[in-house]
Amino acid sequence: MVGSNQTQQSGSIPRAFIDDLLNRTDLVQLINARVPLKKAGTNYKACCPFHDEKTPSFNVNGVKQFYHCFGCGASGDAIRFLQDYDGLTFVEAVEALASFNGMEVPREKISPAMQAQQQKTRDLYDLMFQVAKFYRQQLKLHARSEEAKQYLRQRGLTPEIAKTFAIGYAPPGWETLLTDFAPTWGESTELPSQLVDTGMLIEKEGGRRYDRFRHRIMFPIRDGRGRVVAFGGRVVSDDDQPKYLNSPETTLFHKTQTLYGVYEMRQSRQRFDRVLVVEGYMDVVALAQFGIRNAVATLGTAVTAEHLQTLFRELNEVVFCFDGDQAGQKAAWKALELALPQMQATRSVKFLFLPEGADPDSCVREEGVEGFTRRVDQALTLSAFLFKGLEARLTLPLSTPEGQQQLIALAKPYITQAPEALPDVLTQQLSDKVQVPVWRLGQIMGIRVAGRNRPKNEGVSEPLPKLKVHSKVLRLLKILSAYPMLTKGVPPELFERLQQSDQPEHRFLVEAMQTLLAHNCLSQALADWLQDTRRQRAVALLDQLELPATKEGVVDDFQFLTQQLHQELTQPGLAKRADDWSLEDIAAWQAQQKAQKL
Image 1 (tube, helix red, strand yellow):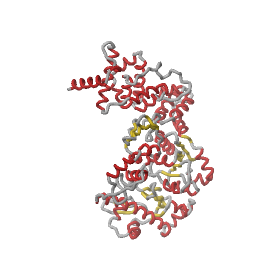
Image 2 (cartoon, rainbow, N blue to C red):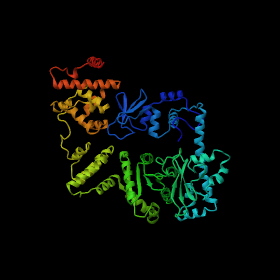
Image 3 (cartoon, rainbow, N blue to C red):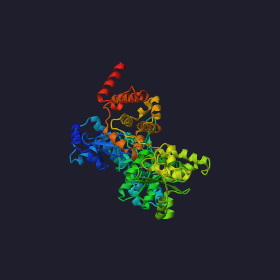
Image 4 (cartoon, helix red, strand yellow):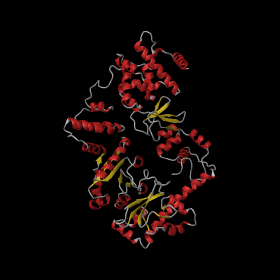
């Protein structure tokens, strides 16, 4: 992609236009078209689209034209939202927003250095396109290409599918690109260095350069926009090594972000329910030959979080296809660990393990498309693979209490990082295996789950307090919801006295702080705790409170409230109740504290 603030057109975008564009944009309308919003006072709320949560913490201010998530910290204006949500560059987001408002994007002159950098990038993309075209011609015309064509025929690939994937041939010479390709590119003193920059030439000490790919079947690797960013090469003879060779990392190619076949899958114009992730580009091409056009492959690396984000932008169901050996199991487990935190409600991940010695190509040839599709349909769900893998790690039988305890301990880190409703589902499955009630497992793992047979009073302070909007408990809770790490600053003596108190509001505050401390002071943990319908009055009252404008003011309020609570609990006859303090009282107290510090 182009750099974040520039474009391939004549110049940069004037700042004044961007300001005008943002002023004209109705941010609520823009976001609501992608994420359904609900009005909450003067703002609008939704579950954050940038992280998984159950309680809405994503706020949109239509007056200030600004959004902010109190859960993950995501914030910005309309341009930032389009960049993050639609995966656009800065320039692409501005252009999309201009189109949304029926405006044309003007351009202004940019520095010669920036123009040169843009031109260099364009030249590299053009060069890779021409190299791919050259390799295509070599497959058709080169005297040594017959061996490559024979291999492709043996794999059952037709000329049409080879054309679709732009498969070519790199001749065996060491300087083919400099001697045979260069004349087709035209006179250019920069060509050798450009070929090095794109990874097509290897440069040794002393300046000697030679072709990276020699006597190989060439697979152009294209990004989502169809631009050639790299190549994969397969040996013609299995006696040569390495069997597969990919381009190195370059300014155009990042293997942890790129998947082979995404562009071709889009170009097939077919509607798919899922995307199949296989191990190599030859698998992608072979499946396409049989009409299975929804396969992609990683490129010399294990699956990454960036790969998963790309896949889920395409389709909601991802099926990983691995060899059934130990290496395949290990790769699948890593994919599971990366996928688990991204498992939103509409998403599905499955795992297909092939028989020993088989690959997708051989399977579809032996079993036919229907047979292979049946295998994919029967792939293990994420939860099934998770528990199968965890049970394989047990050192004691699951039928014993010790084995059941082991499984709970092994499952805990996976269940606690799962988003949305998935922890409930996984905990229920774990409950069925270890014969421990769901609600008890939730207690053991420190998570809140919707379980069966949970005691009515379990985990909820009874009776619930009748809270007032400006009570000390609510004011302190408001601070802790925004700055949860302050929970660790509550004096131990105060915490102990609150625990010993018989006041419902004190027990309510203690339970809230215990929830935060049990979850590393994550604000989402408190939000989930407050989600209980019996605590909805507290949520409604919290929404009416506002925090001080500065962090210093928040800390002052926190100290004031904790000191007042401590005095009230230790000297009830002497302390003025914090609930009765006016804003003037608080301001006077803060001024006194600052004076003492000086």
